[in-house]
Image (tube, rainbow, N blue to C red; front, side):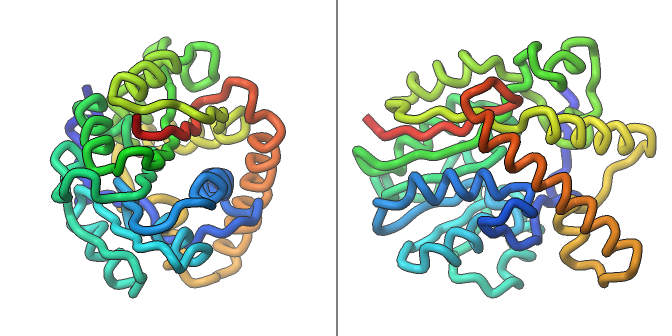
Length: 269
């Protein structure tokens, strides 16, 4: 699979600020995570943190939490450390986490499970480091859903996202839920995300990279965050804000209707 050949040192995700406002593309992920973390106290793990966007955002809204953040990319962790955030960042493989059993009160991960070689092993590791009754909250794309726009394209042979977004797995929704339960979790909440607007944007973005013939060094959010606000950049940001707002409200109203991925909240058995 093309996604397994991806170099995570050459392209990193994140570098932007996320807040609970519709103009941020990942505001829905943050909103659901904070809602589920509302009663959590103690230490949490942000697994697959990238450049630390969600670690920063969770710390902003919940400064009482002890946040540990890990990613397989040394480059991403170096950039995260330069941001001066309160989270404790370290390089680690999600298949072999450098933490003791029953160490965390909660684990969050966003858009990670579809990247790893063994999703089952990673879910088992998450279970291992969680305290009994601890909270696990995640967002997982389910690109094996042929009734979604991207899922249908992938079934027809579209590989741009696999190649340039490092998505070697295309999970059917029921398979994801089965793996989570099999790893020792009880699912307490399911919400759908990434409906039509997000899917169309991603199809255009990854298809353009396919036409270009080579990847970029960061996500769009990271690029916009570190680029000076020239007139063209301001226009791009305005367009981004409009599309993000449409996506936010689409997800908010259609959380019950199948989209491209699942927001899953569960407890360790």
